[in-house]
Length: 415
Image (cartoon, rainbow, N blue to C red; front, side, top):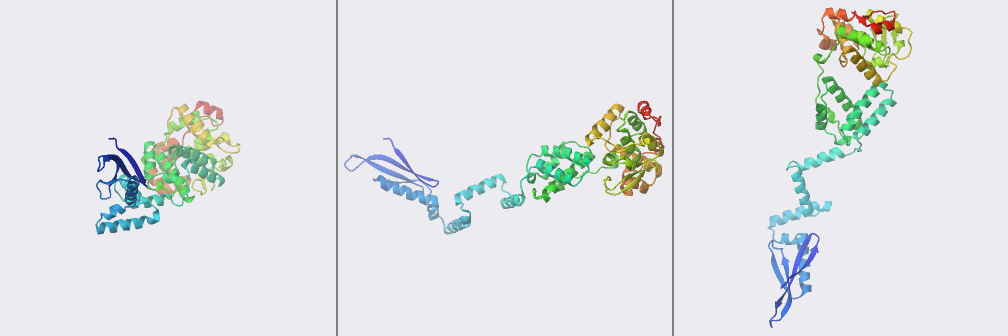
């Protein structure tokens, strides 16, 4: 005989009613209804002759199971008290005990049983009082602020180039970027020690800005490993290499190359320099407060060989470098190095000047004043990198025909 099944549902609980036929006292088949009762923890059937009575009992059982009354009825006193306390604790949340238990179990699995409450506190700390904003958008805002405050075009161009790469690498809200992610990215780029340090510095600036504007809780770069740029990492040019570079440099780039090599100015300072700052009569170059990296004015001597290289520019006006920062790097440094058959070495002009000048004078304080840093830095990075003979050869590199700039550009430089 086929059994019909009816379901009574209350909340998440379902109680089944099975309808069958069985013979009555006279042997005639009559409808009979069985209700599946799980209130005791095991299935028991309750029988009813009337469908309405069976349905009513099924609803009662379903309500008991849904509210936990049935379970509570079988609990020991301690269990019942614990259950009651749990319901009381959950009351402000509006969660049922079943949903709370399911949520806890899922969190337990995700965290592998470790410090669920601590994880919740960490989440709140990371997401409170912050405005979600993507790294690339924060970089754009930072650049706009720097530009409005009068930052040098070369600095802005360098910052824009580096932050564009950072924004593409971290396509997410700044508050979600971790120290481990930044460390992994920096390591994967295979930067030189100086390149690594430069990018870490820009990242630190960016996330400090994000924290100050309320886009992040803290600066994840603070925990990223620092790398020291040691003296051994400071590559220099030899006298013959600088002669080759000067021999093929364009008319526009040649004075920048010569000033970097024989006056030790930073590339950024050269890009800000004007011909009004170059006094060929007084034989010095003045780097003003707004043009010096350290925001401190200094005066650098023009040595004999530098004066020879700059002689034909005596009547020039305007910026020493007329192009953009991008052109300074590519059309200036890279194209010149390629034409000369010399590998371009980052910051090597300044490092070369410092090394050869210190070897020539043995006066760290004097060289530090010309470079715009400290005597301790000069001692640490430039002492004994070159010998006196090489230093003399360096400052003897002059154009073959200083009276005719076209001639020495074509013929080359002499030692």
